[in-house]
Image (tube, rainbow, N blue to C red; front, side, top):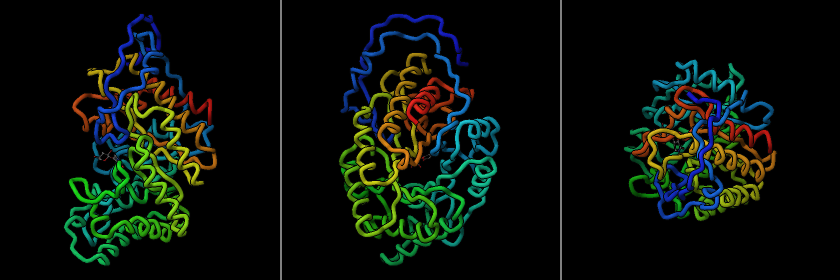
Length: 386
Ligand code: XIL
């Protein structure tokens, strides 16, 4: 229960945080030092959570404010949870499917598509005035097992992939505002994801042209949907974003359709720094296409070894959310805002929980579905800069 009253403020000695994380949520990068300046700004230790008075995050915002939600067979499916439904409708104007529109979910065998769960979610969204961001047409992860054991020459692989993209995008045509067409095709060093544990069957069997082929097929199937390239660590890795920028320029030169870049932004409380985030957004703004924060969450327990979220860490998270949203709004002009999506409603549902040994609280609502100070941080930034 968040007590809305501040009882007292205690002086404490600020100890600098000593670890930080990558933007991907995939690996913790301990080589990067935190921004000491930010830590030193906080001289007082809170004993109570600061007030949260947000009626509706999306109120007065003219771009997508989204949230990823579980559906289908997931126990935490939004379609089975009144609390999650209420928060989604109150605060957001767009949904992403956290899992049920991935390749394995929609295309379980070569000859069958299963659209039931996704249709139920899309219907829920449209019945409640929410738009949908499609996630995701082509990705190396959460592919169907039949895809991984598919055999055939390059042409057969192209037809197999294009059939997936065309069938799925056609099925949802006119009902989704946007699609993540290709997810995570590059490594952090800017090379294409190829072999290894998290290699890409698409790159291995088709080569780099799988990306443009997916965009061309998606545009043909659903001409009105905005088409995004989506990846992690784009707000921190100059090499990775550089590769994406070069790809977009090449697409623009050759009239391959692409409308925006999705920055996943699974980040931590102190990395990457705000000036780096702004500089990375700016590189996509300069291409004249949209910038969308597609999967925002902010881990706070990368070094502190906490068992529970403390008021002072919640306050740091509030400031961090405020700073990230402010960076987006001050860098990306209105016409190029694809929107901001958080990757989950409640901390209890966050994928981050299963990813690291320590507990964490990366999202805007706590286990009781109450707004955290982080929610206030997002609302404050939106009110100031939207
Ligand atoms: C995650 C989901 O949140 C988890 O429930 C699932 O087990 C694995 O995938 N980048 C993406 C998302 O593009 O699809 C991932 O979602 C998180 C990282």
